Each structure stands twice: as structure tokens, then as C-alpha cells.
Length: 198
Image 1 (cartoon, helix red, strand yellow):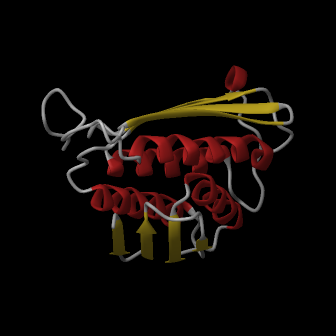
Image 2 (cartoon, helix red, strand yellow; image 1 turned 135 degrees about the vertical axis):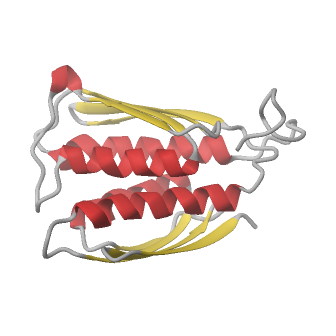
């Protein structure tokens, strides 16, 4: 069973993550950041991951530390659950539409963390409840780098708000990562010509 449980405690946050990669899409997400909770529920549902996240942070200052540390802990959980990565497809991609917005996501679990997001014509829609486009970028950057994943996200079209803009992106992320972590029965060993993925 590809599972992991991560506990990350700092002077600023206390994060707990339980992950089962080969799940049925169930989740219990309580980060204290409403929009992030919703987006991670969508990610879990479409990725078919069993995911539990609890977070306590220094919200009297702002949401930055909690948002970033949840991304760090989630990336660590995936990396631990994947182990030596033998047999995985490694690369996955998906495109998801939602009304006037679509999102293209490509992921490569190659051991080298990199993240890039493109909003249409530089548009960064306003967020709600204190959560903005920059916060989503920081979360995804932390997640990708801790997992050791190249992650590219491209938003097409212009949503009326951050919620409608990011929702298809997190659905596509779930689908792309689901594909990347699937076991390919024809793949013997690590999916790298080097024979190892760090």
C-alpha cells in the first residue's frame, strides 16, 4: 500500500497529512483556509487519493506560512508514499474546462522540483477571504519542489474570480498526478534511463 503520514511542526505552523495514493477520492481537509480546502478536496476527488490534512497556523499574522507549509507537507507525503518510484508512469497531463476557463496541467515526477504557472495575458484574478493568486502559486511551488516534480500549469480564458479560475486547475492537477503515479505493468524498475529518481 502506497501510504504516508507526515507531521510538520514549526514555530509558525502545525501540519498533519495522511495520504493513500491508491484510494477512492475521499478527503477531510481542514487547513483554516476555506478556498484552499475546497481546491484540495477537488484535487483528491479527481486524483482518487485518500487525503486528510489538518493545519494550525499563525493566522493572526497572515495565511502565508500555513498555505506554504501545507504544500511542503503534501509534497513530502507523496514523495514518501511513492518510495523508489518503481513501475510508475512518471509523467501525466490533463486538460479540464469549466465554463469560460480551461486549465492545462503537465507533471513529471523526475526528482527535480520545478513549477511554472501562466495566467492569460498576465491576468491574476482577485481572490476571496484573503486568498489570492500569489498564495496559490506559493502552495503549488512548495508542493512541486518537495515532491520532486516538474509542474506546469496554464490557465486559458478569464474567470470572473479566483475560485472559478483555479478550480479547473486543481481538478486537472488531480487527474495529471493520478496518471503519473499509476503503475504501468510493462514498466520494470524505475522509469528513468538513469535507473534512479531521487
